[in-house]
Image (cartoon, rainbow, N blue to C red; front, side):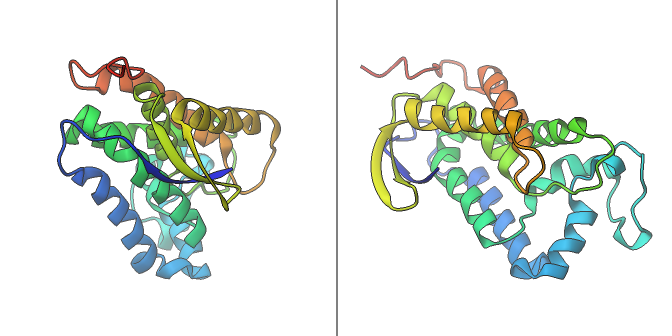
Length: 230
């Protein structure tokens, strides 16, 4: 739909959003070093070892011994640090770069980290519960990033954001219209799209978690819905 570029949203509480930057760096390094920059065999092996496979997560199937690296329950978070290719990675990290720093600013470092991981877990659970017998691994930060988007919209619906619409048309729109349309798109596709490579239900799980958690994770005194703006 669109590529986020920049938001006119000054941070108030946090000078350096180092948790958000560390999450971005971790995703990039894992992709470049562990997944060998998207090399097919490395992506496949990592997807089964660290991706979220519903049937394995619910102990209905067992991984091959050579692929069993961590306890199965950890995959509900580890999947979110893997990506299938450059565009998959860049798309998620752009969203995190533009929107994550302001959410970290509203929450503080440690609460933002907990928030991010809980949104990842919520997206993973939503995907796993949809079909507990599925053996298709889920990878990607989209569930967690969706939670960040939902929190940003709850905090700053009136902020202007520069984007490339359709990948080429520069537009400056408020978060309410831009992110609101993006969220509606995720819910609609979760209802109508079957199969495919994009797990929209994981996005929905992250969105719902982000919208709920931001109410409790924001700093005391940080308003919702840009109430401090004139």
